[in-house]
Length: 173
Image (cartoon, rainbow, N blue to C red; front, side, top):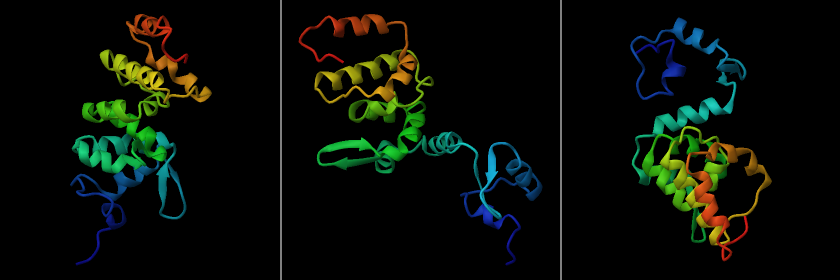
């Protein structure tokens, strides 16, 4: 059978909406979301678009598959693959199981990202996971993380930190 003019694009997707046509595709690719990467090649103008959309695409997968996609084990420690950290943080904002997993294995991933999409009691859990790593001397003061601390703000933050600060047996952060 003859190939559709959409063939190079349709091979990227499991299913193509019936409303997709070549004019609509070209109009979409002409927006500021995309930039040319050579003849008949396009990419997102900013990596964040790709990371967000990738996270949305996999958000309903079971945790076991998400771990296979995003995590590796070095020795005995599981961690998020550094190149996938931003996508993992986006995913944690929409998938509670994955968020809980990140809090157990690699909460710094959330510190290195804009976690404004994580709200309320979940922020308390992020701070708790970070403080627990600090208690075990597994967290290091990374000057690059400081710019993200403001995204941890929530109503009970001062009280949560005060308990840690006042315990002289704990690691100084």
